[in-house]
Length: 250
Image (cartoon, rainbow, N blue to C red; front, top):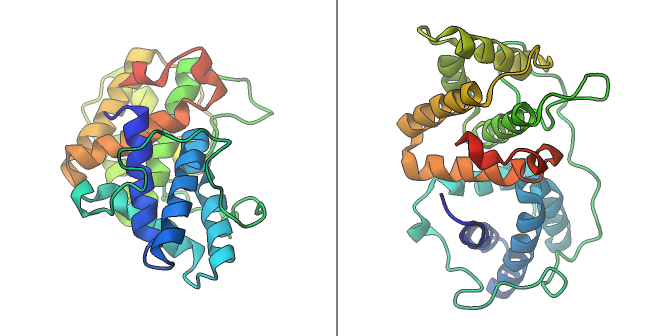
């Protein structure tokens, strides 16, 4: 997987490519640099707010959902098809000195109009809620990574993600520890139900490996590495990552 700096550069290129269709090259360059700073601090969790600010500022008429899908879709293209990095050959900017999207802070991203049906896996933002006891750090990190993988794959092709996740979660031949993980993850994705038990890191690692192999079959290893890089980046910002590094589950 790429290091953090390479991943930030890749995302600047993605944003420059997307926004280049809606604004001048200089404006697209400036906003792509701003996105690099936002991405470094928040990973993809800051995407909706960032795109809403840019959309409002520059009068872009394409919907927020379509812009989001354009960004996610470019995670699966050959990097050679992207515009050049706006900071090619330059030092990474400090957060305080980088330009920011010029709109005022926007409200939180829109909530879904309705709860997903029980047979459609839904991406969750957090592993626990205030009424549930917290899981051990490896389990919280694992759920954060699975949620990030689900959000990325749903944004690109929701139907394909539904089929892929069902095949991973329901495939036969799992040993008891993996069946227990599969059952908990299925309930968590489908019903937003908390995990019923803590699982050993080895079982969580094995299960992520199953997702990795399924994604490789669907998208290839390069694109799958990008999805997992996003999952790691988001999990590293979860408080549980201070006690258990997400890369230990790879």
